[in-house]
Length: 413
View (cartoon, rainbow, N blue to C red):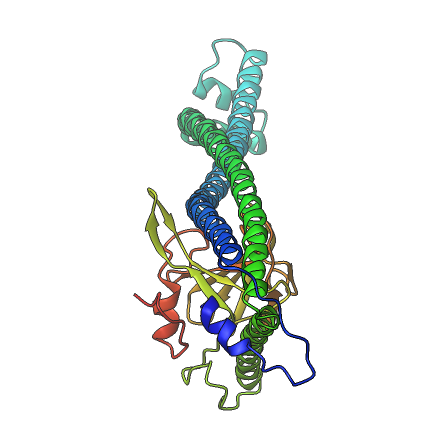
């Protein structure tokens, strides 16, 4: 490539132009050897960077999985704790009912004692001073005989049963608390591994950058000795053109997604090419860097799509926001329950523009791409849960979107 660049960049001097330098073969050979050595070192470091980058992606996914597991354990603990509190309240109500029944029977026993310790039903009735008292005493005796004693026995049995249920609920709460603690420890370990691997990656990346500087200097020296003074400028211009073309392509992609989103919001057919004809619109734009699937003993439950920070993220279909804000592992995340029954998750976002309970329409911007949480660079982590659960039942988002007319690319499955 250097040779072709040198040939293209060669200029024909004018008659009055000074003659270019004419280096010896030895000088050119030494410069070429220096360039080859620098290129070999860059290649070696590039291999180390690739390994470190793969390890960084692995521990990043593991940290995300640990964060999701911790959130599930935390929610289970809260449910068990609520159940234990409910059982305790029911137990207290049962105890109060037993106390009322006991008080009624105690009052009757007191009345019986005041009228004679061996009073019988017949004696109690015959000792009545009139028809009104007779009816009252008969009613009291019948009530106690038929209701209070039986009710007291039933309430005492219910109290024992409720006590057992309360004990079981508290045991379940303690078990869930232990599971939450274990999940939190696993998350902390995964986060520590991610931090350590980020340090390794940064170190080898810095080494590569330093050697790339040396290689670039050697390449420039070779070009200068070969008389291609304009070759490096042409190479720079070519790189700038490539970057400009890539930026233009990214801008065009984002513009198409925005146009499709706007068309979906206004219920107009989209001519942008990035939306479907089934009521869905593209939720993101950018380059897919990691697909859905199992790796390194855990599951990557979504797509990673690289885009600059601030790139808009849209609702793929009308729905209701289930959750928006801080999320373990993701930093910030939005969970959208679509009208199709699926939950759509946007993780590592920079900011969000909706709240839980908000109603949104297809194509409405709900967030923007960020680099928060356990992230290795600006991107969005996008998940689809067709069963409507926020933390389980994830499906391949690429296949899901492709089937609805939104082309994602190679991760379609």
